[in-house]
Image (tube, rainbow, N blue to C red; front, side):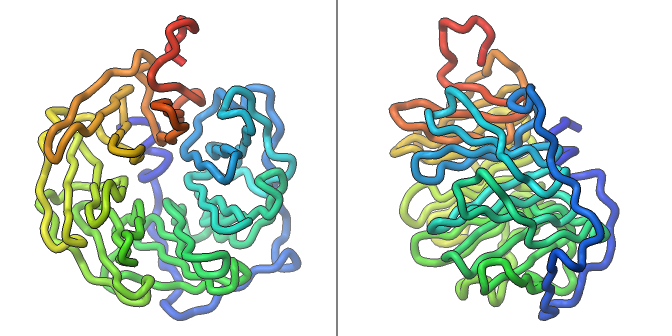
Length: 327
């Protein structure tokens, strides 16, 4: 199994989470000791797992609590000043003037100064349930989803988090969440277990997918249409809110971890340097990035340029011809 999949999805021990409806609040007084992320000279060459654009600023997160930011489209990066965790961070989210980051040990962080300084809102390493994705409807109401059916809800900007569940009987990994234009929420999950909500996550129903493998990315590609991408190159498309699905033939078996919509272009990235561009409804073109690394995320920079993250940091697509190193 590839390194990124191990860190993001697997090699975890199952423990029982709290019951849905239990309100969970944490204060600094209740925490014995906080480990802060170290400032390291080669942090931008470490494993990075997610990127986001918040205004004109780019941010990325990864192993050991690393958070970096850039104000020049990723040409230069600065490490965040204060990050109160050394847990691997897997996801970033922004809403209004706030930022959130989350990851292993069920840690959730927030920043109100553009990502320079962070505070810890939630931390429960005994759960063994990393957060895989975050979604905020506004600065107060948000969801965190993750391994073994993890779902946390906040209605006060993260001051408190409430245990929730898509299904009391399911404990499959919940990997990615997307909100469609009509307000429908879709979750791409493990082993074909994926879900839909029409009421901002209050209730959920199971989706009937044609492929019973794990999906790692849910992506709205156009009005009313969504892609799920995941294990062994599988890509599924729905244009009716998840009622029916068609499976695209990518011709690849590399696991796909992320995707981005850029105008009419859809780009998917995954293991082994794989980049797939969607050319039509069921027409896909594969490109091999010369780095050959496992990609975890892709971000649209505009003007046909994309920033990728994964093993050993940042990469560009299209590849700059003057660097000679594939980055």
